[in-house]
Length: 187
Image 1 (cartoon, rainbow, N blue to C red):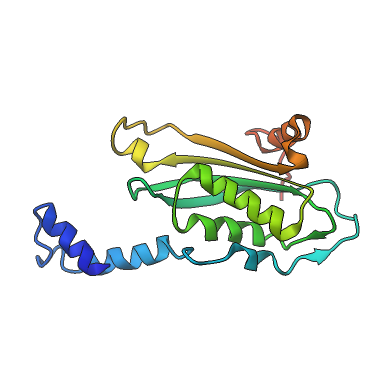
Image 2: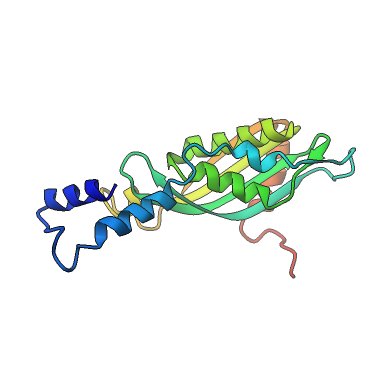
């Protein structure tokens, strides 16, 4: 990776051996190792500790405002935002920290937002045998903000649904809970 960054710096006319840039290839290599740490990671591992609940869970589990960071596969620029993940349990639930771990594992690879939401929804549907799953991603994209059209305030919103949460009324209820200004418990 560091070798490729040196070549890239040379290709843009910079001297990768200059005092200012000498450490840059190693730093970029370390950054990319972190950005792409989800490559090859199976998100199901975070759902394997699900516990049986025998119908005592309520109707919905929702975790909103999960920090999201990924790298767009088109330009290798970051996109950042929030993931909101809801599921209707069938007979088991998972510890709440598992949901951000699934998001992180799938986001930490070259991605597009549309596919990422679908992958999160499918992982939860498969891993928990949930009655329904709804994933809403809101993100701003470096490829939109920092190049091309340079729309710095634009956000993309994508929705992926499975099972009972594909129903319009059920989706609307969850969307109302996610919406800005919706009731939020104070701690």
